[in-house]
Amino acid sequence: GIEVKLHESPWRYEQMENPIVITLGAGQHTPLWVNKKRVPLNNLEGEIKRLRNEEGGEAITTAVLKSDVSVPSGVEKEIIDRIKSMGLNCGLLYKPAGNK
Image (cartoon, rainbow, N blue to C red; front, side, top):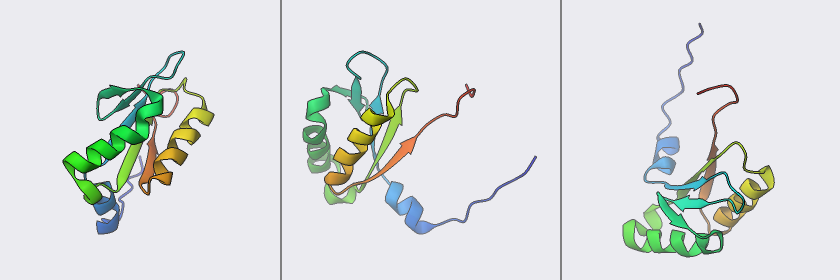
């Protein structure tokens, strides 16, 4: 196999410190969790603001989006846009098809 070593970038790790984890699940109305708490889709911004106020304030600069494979890409894009409009960096985590 091939071994790949990524450069240890302090910026990359600094940006990912204490991220808010947003999970989109499979289902008719796309269930949403923010840091393992089930939240209505229309309350995403309110929950992120609450977490930033209670758990880290402006030190929280990043959100990570985890999404079920069945979630439409348009829904993912909408969530990412909403996160970015709050001034947060956002990354999308996914598992390539065929991996378990």
